[in-house]
Length: 395
Image (cartoon, rainbow, N blue to C red; front, side, top):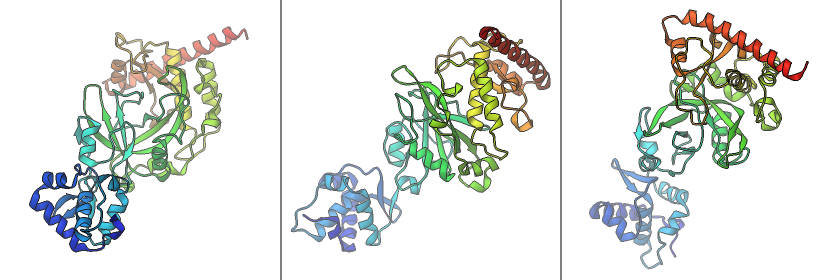
């Protein structure tokens, strides 16, 4: 049987390309028993021509008396086909290489994304054929409780693995970890409920934290929460310092946080405050810290426990009637004084707000008044929760 290693004449490939043009794509593919290519194409006079069917036709031309391999032979070796054609001087490209997606690009489903750029249409992160760029897909119709995306601050993207404790080396998680370690730009796609997948922005995987979640089996488990920072584009020279330096810091391992308050099923407010302060003591005086996001998660969890599912603002006119994707009250945990303004990642400087109060606090006319009021509220709630913990312990 003829093999790709037997394809040594460029004229055979040129003849197959001419036959493709003469018959038309549909008839050519039908004649050789192939489906339409989704990944690699010969670029010829600006046209993208299916690479594997052309290679099969070229083998038949060069070795007409030999048994010819069928489509299954070519399915097993995309890279072999590419190497054979490139060795004969032909340019082989993918759709993503020739026309990569631009921010704002929209597709109704992963199947449409696959049709546009190749690869597979399964859930989870992928690289498009011919590219090194990782694509992250956050789907509000899917099983993972990712944070809502943001263009101005870091947000969370849950790891892969539907049941049991998540691992960095499982499924597509190594793709994300590779992007973090290399500091590479990553495309972030998001589909809201009832919406379409949109290439929202470029991000860098700045770090990761270990958090509590609920698996497909409805059991609580430890999950990876990758921290994504939106960046202006794929050029690192345009990124903020924290994004450029993130890959130089190794996040905490699952073993290092085992048994810590923030990754136990039912910690108290006091447990979490002590954990926050413990992590503060070990924080490094650098632009990027190993413990920053673990500390932030512990602090946010503490504030949610303190709030008892209610907006902490005295001005609140009512909570949203719907729960969030985790089945919890819809609350935004926000810093009263922003970190960029010298605020701390500590429950004393954080408050749980309903979406309306959060919008008023961050974008309202009286932001300074909100800041003063919320500082008093957080301090009082903090003292009350700590006092309740002391009373409960009998100390």
